[in-house]
Image (spheres, one colour):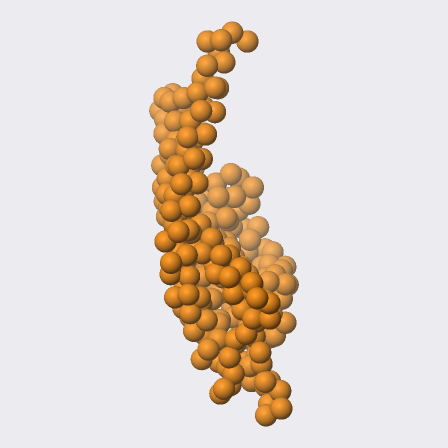
Length: 253
């Protein structure tokens, strides 16, 4: 391979390195800011539990460094969340020159919809699932059985559910993408609705705590999103791609 042919590839590697460095700087800066507010962030995350705990019950930590480690982890995850728009922007600036014009048309709506659904899923978990689910779980305490929730356990519990609900709310975007690729269609989704319902309840059972209420709170929105996905798949099939003029442009890199 001649040096002239290697140069574009080396330039791409250099650009990738620079953009990764920018992303790391963004995450690092966000981490520092989140660290200063780590106690407030954890207090916000703990509101559903505090409201559900019996009277005179508190959260605890059982090792000297547990609270410190929890604040470090929370600051890091929040830093990733708050810096994700900038990270996605850097990713877009890296891959955009290699896309056709008709491909670029779908990227921005796709990203906005995916981000919106992910945040909606997390908000649903925090404002709906946590209050009802935690209240139900704490209802098993008695005069002689008091809950003592560890900081680390609660952080893992909340982050798992927040990410799980955010991920499952991406179902319409995932189905729309597969429909555009020709992998599935709305007839397939409608015909296999019974199997989808079974899978949805299995997924809800795996991703949520072992109580029926929380599983239903996840399965319910998933069933609704599945029906929305069928409608989106039908809409995607109505607009076949005719990118002849766009493809003639070709990638810009």
